[in-house]
Image (cartoon, rainbow, N blue to C red; front, side):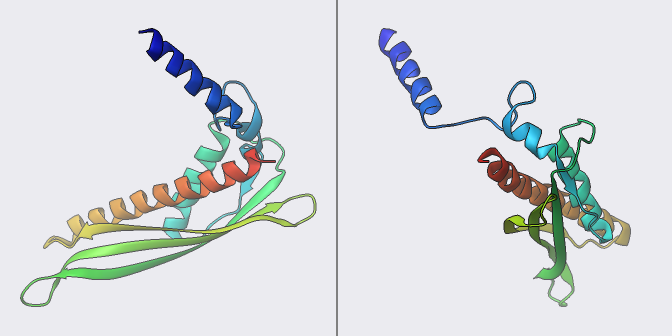
Length: 163
């Protein structure tokens, strides 16, 4: 039992010694405060709206908008590819790929602080009922938008946490 306690203490000390800082710590410290100061520029199309909404939720964490020290510009591209086919060559499955290129811009001087790319591919069944197919594609887009927002948030929070 003593060894387990000693091992936990060594692990805890090594994590704090490496400079680890949680993004969403208690209070308004560090990267959480910095991400709250990021303004997300509007992104066109429905998929862009989904990515924008999820980015704002993740970056601001439910807090009201503070002064914007940074602006996040995202360009989004959506591609559909039919991947499954029946014997009569009608599609049974589609991949919806959302690709984003983004820039984090310092609002004071207009300099690009971070530049990156993210991609998410999600599948949807093509069913005999058109409405069911529409719902499956809408769900795949939403999953893709959430995945992209998570990846972009991770990069932005990491960059701002290092500052």
